[in-house]
Amino acid sequence: MATDLRNPPAGSLTGLLGDILNDAQELIRQQLALFRQEVREDLRKTRDGAIALGVGVGVIAMGGLLLLLMLPLLLNWLVPAIPLWGCFGIVGGLAAAIGAILLFAAVQRFKSIHPMSDQAATGLKENLQWTTPPK
Image 1: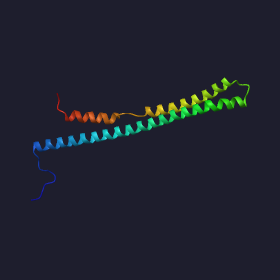
Image 2 (image 1 turned 135 degrees about the vertical axis):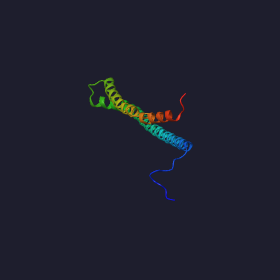
Image 3 (image 1 turned 30 degrees about the vertical axis):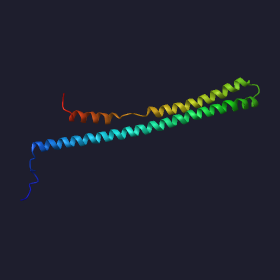
């Protein structure tokens, strides 16, 4: 007997409901997998930002220490008219400016991290509304 492709056989109502529930469960599984992937990506960005912040702080500390000890003495030797305290002030100000620039760059990197995208959160919320029974 040939099958009529234009009119597929009607399934039972329970079979259709079962298929709908299976599809809804699969959709929720996919949404949760997407959510987990986004969380992993945000954690990776957070780790990279923390590493950049740590390196920036380390460079500020080492650079500040070395410059504050060496450069004022060199400046005082090159320009004896500037008092030693003035040389230390000039070099300290430059070290602080460089450190502020590095710190600003790290803060900007942290600001670019979004814990959960609005699109993923909205999609997950809609799917949960469709699959959970009303209260």
